[in-house]
Image 1 (cartoon, rainbow over the protein chains, first blue to last red):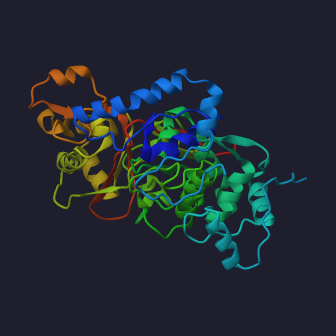
Image 2 (cartoon, rainbow over the protein chains, first blue to last red):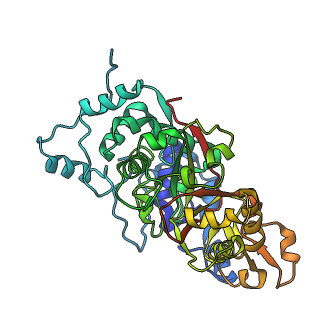
Image 3 (tube, rainbow over the protein chains, first blue to last red):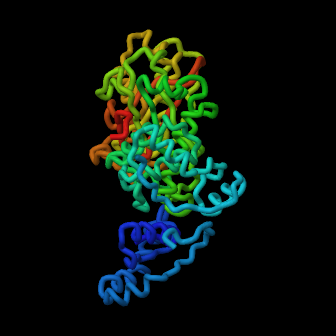
Length: 83
Length: 351
């Protein structure tokens, strides 16, 4: 689980460990500096994805995660690390 | 007989410009020109050390790239190392791969941390590793290229490219190269490696993940307590990881003149550490106002202290590494840690 900003990092680290299709639950960046009610809002938004990651068939999740792109507001100058 | 080298060969026009265009385009440089790692140059580095190119030095996080003697040698050549620097780079890399160094965290964090290499013993003099004027700055080939080779290994083998697997918010200039020797000749105390269990005749590398040097200017104090009070005031700040996290190793690099002033008052290294443990502190009231408050990793009973209680930066006096380096002048340097990492010392050698 990570913020959209760090999805690419989380995905690359998962791939480095051989977990190529690991489902990663994404919440909006940032998590630091939020008020408790904003944290609660982020958590509420993530519940559905967490339930899916834990209950949907592995093959279905693998297919979804294989080429998943998560948009971030910040431009990161790179290509996929393991391309 | 030399073993076969395995690295992929790139065919490119035989000019420095063409090689550098290709290497930069592939993300294999630090932005500065590299020395083309031709088979001859790589073989020369391996032969000088008697290294087996196929030997695995370790797995470099976060990409979990395999560092072999061959690709360590390739990065040494690219960085501009002389062949005789190769064992220093190998030893520093092995030290960085010890779990307590926490290379994974150091590579991927938003904090600017970079591995500092401190060379001790006779080899530091033999290789002309600068321990004197401007040791953290430019001008010495050993400092510049040993440090640079390690950075290139961290990016090319470990995959820690800025904005990719290295998520340092701003980074720091010492990510280009960060290597010094201790000025053992001008230190009033036993050198770092002797303090850490080696003999003065041993040659070692000590690696530690820290921030770039923060200057400590004291042109006034003529006593140990005076110099160290200035050090303590520079060390304990809100915007520093070890203030809130810990324990970890931090580094105080005393300039020889400051060290002499401190030693003149019969302070041993242990006394310096104890003094700074007692005096590098911030009141709990202030620590609660920002920094990493809320994410702090300190004993829970600290929270029961009064607002005026002074909380120590160092969790234990021995968490502080003291090194003497630099030339003449009244400057020292404070290098706070990443907050979750420890120094590792190894003998220089291929094993």
